[in-house]
Image: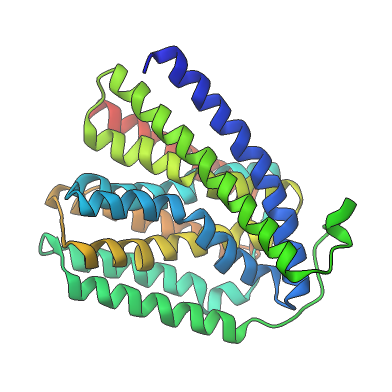
Length: 316
């Protein structure tokens, strides 16, 4: 495929991604109301799961093909991008308010998941029983998230207009929700494929492609959904989507991938990429504790350090 065609597909994927993300946020809030669930739960479970599908698809296929760099690098790079890029950009549009309930369950689970991943990688292999532990943790997280989710009045300014605001049919709303997720993932897939072709055209190494092009490409749903939520001032979905997605990436995606085939780990990532992922997770958690929000300045700091990380990968 020529460079020009790849660029056109890249732009097409971006347009599809942005439009579908906008509808996804609208239908997510409507679905929360109809199911009498909080929008925080929608962001943590439904949206996070849907936007984690690209990571799951890439890592599972990579595990089947025994491509260790892609299987693990995609998840680690995606989690870094979710915080540095998604939270960074979303926070620049509007300061991101953080619900206190996140500090009781989701943020600790995210941090423990990161530390567990580092521990499981220490011996150079994520084996099947460790993948099983991740999946058990994922099941427990979903169970307690659903159990503790309760109906609440919408506390943030967000209004629906048009047919969506009057739709009472749960099957129809859920069908639209699934359709939005499908086009969101399709847009990300188009961007990943074209991005890989562009990277190969310029002769970039496979590891750099895995942790940048694949990671950023599969993080585009989180980025699009979080930015759209931030613009609409629905911070519970914006922050909840990123935190939930990072948890899903480790517990569900790597759990399934390592269960299919044990993942060999290059020990060099224990000295750079994994510690950096943990550092990003800790720093964003500390930022959230500051007046229960991520300010524009803090978002800018996250984005700046993410850009430095990308530049360092290409020049080292």
